[in-house]
Image (cartoon, rainbow, N blue to C red; front, top):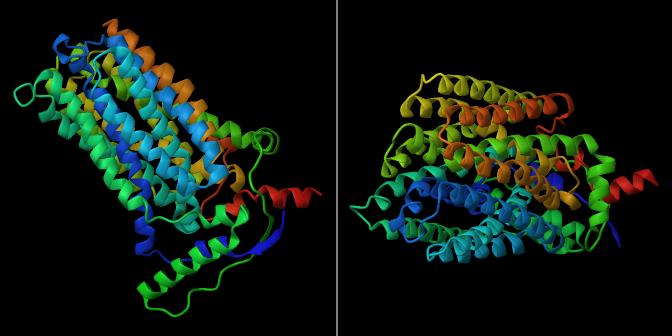
Length: 480
């Protein structure tokens, strides 16, 4: 393949913030609202779909299984679509994965049997999982380096806007005086499709990643896109000239990257970075998927909260989760990645241990337990969002989407599938000590992940992606 020199990464990194960046943020970042909506819907409808009159009649453990099936679909979808994203481009895949989500979530509304419900949840998860790889890679490749951490955390934190929306809307939808027991939960799934269509219309305006284009033998198209972006930014800020870009890089173009080369990059060239990514993903996936998928069941089982009232308790938790990345995000660019990531993970783990002790001692009510979760997740949410930021910026361009998918799949597969199924059975036992044991596992995983980041993490704040991890072709030339 041909070798080319390009200054496109430097030109993108030196751009001042403009309306065009808001288009990228909204068009791509809004997918996390959908994911948050899906997770919350499954969480709050748990008590409703276990009602014999719901038209589905699942057991408590089957609700946990459904959550696990959703996560399994997300893991496999991330791997499948992640590989395609690196091979065929960011834009093509972030449109395809959104369509998969739309079709599957509409189909879920028509469930009458457990197996059909599981199948729909699997494909809904596959669409969302594919989004994680395509969207995170596209955002980090389009956003300037100096604000990449802030933007990435806000984008990933928008997941909790979806949970707040889902919880707030679920209150009237699950009220049997408003909609029949077998209708309300179905309408909730239809809402996700309506929101997804709106996002699809905006997303069509987002261009392909120029970084992906110039490596994949389409440098002319990349040049045209960057020139158009620069023209729009100059027009907006009223300047004829922008700051001069930094250095050029010289790369060897390629059509695709073999999976063997991806594996070599993760296991031989960057083994410590791989360990960091796994630790961060396993910790946050176990914590979030286990607690959030089953919190409605905890409220109804241990505190006697009526099924229709459980969403009220999820709204303040969602607000705390959203405020964490938004308020702390800028410090990931100013103070740095290692301090903020490790600090958020360890602190949230310690706070979770305290919450578990209070719950075990019977010192909490439904309201005070919710307040505890708000504090725990304020820090845990910033840490969890930074996990996606970390794995999207510490590996070479050619492997970025698949690396995100791999860490998401492995970490979420271990923590996100085991967690909900385990917690579903722990809650079903109606023994406080069993649930506390689950909380303790989650806290230990978060603290361990924070320590791994502190000792092995890469400081990537305000650095170009190509400086953090040079493209594979550059590394090969240096080795030769």
